[in-house]
Every structure is written in structure tokens, then in C-alpha cells.
Length: 66
Image 1 (cartoon, rainbow, N blue to C red):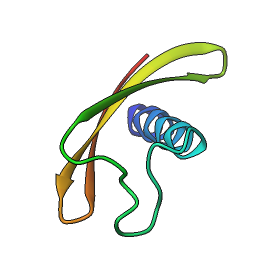
Image 2: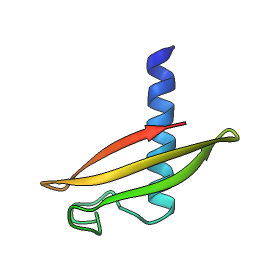
Image 3: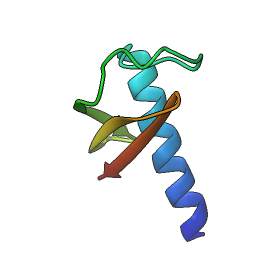
Image 4: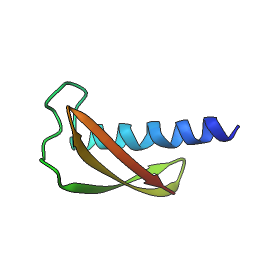
């Protein structure tokens, strides 16, 4: 159950970042250099905050909290 909750939280945060056009799914679509970019989102009425950071090689690092 805990793994599903973690997965759902990460999916909600990634979907919110995509909707806010902070990053895309294709290589080169993380539109900043090494800056940490925080953003807010909601999952079933609970407020969440996340930040995403470009770690190079077209990969992103996410930290998410409700």
C-alpha cells in the first residue's frame, strides 16, 4: 500500500509539472539549466509542493511532499 501511495504522489506531481509547462517528456524539454524549480499541486484536495532539478543527461530529480 505504501508503494502505491508513493507512486500516486509522484505521478500527481509530475503531471502537475507537465500541466504547468515546467518540463516536457522529450529530451531537451527541461527548460532551465541547473536551477531548482519549486511548484505547487493538489491531489484529491490535499495541497502538495514539489521541486524539480535538472541533473544533466536529460534527466530530472524530483522531491515531493504533501
